[in-house]
Length: 550
Image 1 (spheres, rainbow, N blue to C red):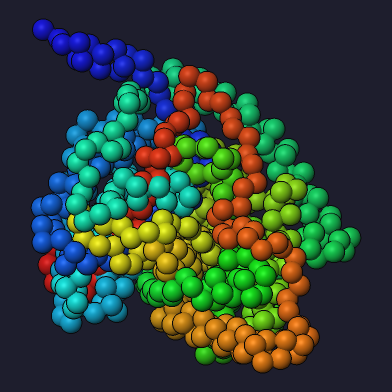
Image 2 (cartoon, rainbow, N blue to C red):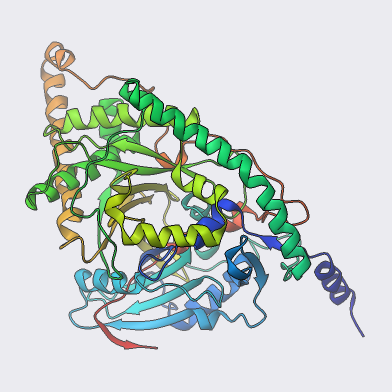
């Protein structure tokens, strides 16, 4: 005999709809290949000494409880034949958290270099599309008795901003995990059901009918930019010219990783001192690191390197899973030797890029996702990976800045010390740099193609040198101001083109985006509160130099 609860659950299942991925999410499946997986990851380093009860078993117990709150992590893909339309989410009837978690031990000496090598190796492996698109690696054997957690999640599940809140669910504010249902949802959504062949066909026809409008919109934007460049429109109104550097080539299957961390205080001081955004300060650190690394390789171009910076399109209160992103091309002033000049130009370039984006500039990834069926985009991506030198470069590398929680966090009782992000590589972009700010520090992750970049530490270590350079400038000017205010005031500063307290992150720049109703095929209205809480775990650890694997 069915109880009232059972009857309610069965009724909710009867109300379930097919749930199709949006264009913005599906594009990450279409551009994926064995040599260029489309997942992101996080390498989280934990201090077990904060809890005597911390263990692998306790971690698994807490992880299972928290994952149960995030329905999306229990769904897998259903992909229509021949790539004629976007994929669907369906429930995985065989879901088991234990099948997604692996254990590995670092070989001696278990130092940070070995951890980064392992992380790069693990990050190179694509996720299994037959299962929910995430996996977790527990890494022990670190030389300082720390534990590392590497969490890999496919980019079609979420963007960086929607992932920040994942920490709310997977992590706690105290060493004692919250077992009181702090995150319990009022009512579970019914899991998405598998669409019938008629529903798949009908939806494919509807989506195909919408593509001509998207083609017209994106073609107009591309044409306007092309004509503007030909007519000599001022540079601020046009995308920048992009030079080619050694890491702009054909991607291979190998990945290498390096990481570093800096305190947030000196970055705030520089932001205030130069009257720029925090995002500009972070981009200057990366610019300086790229400049010094390429000079070491005797490969610094005359034109400035261009960074592709993801920008969030989320409106206030948008609490859905998935991707709401665009990107803006920002010249990084690597042709300038002086840090003050670099910072000023980066700030100006970022502001100009935001204006281009707000005015509706051409955006390659959005255009491809909205104009082409997945099968066609998959084929085009393979061609692009095979002949990268024949294609125009929108940028030399992707640089992301994600703002995390500014307070101490714990995972199953262990204190979270560091969170190093690992992102995906795009066509002809053999390097990605992502920064995560949390608990009064900023952690940088450098993911590179191991065939195109000889040593990622050459660039990661440049972040520390860049910070010292900015600190020295700020300290020197502060000394001058204290001893001679007149001289200090006469010292030239970068133009204050933004009010103090402006946007502090490229990912935080809201541009606004129209939402498209998918009719009875719901477009995943998930609580961002839940989403966000999951992504925190997203930034987990790495693997290579393996001694043993479970």
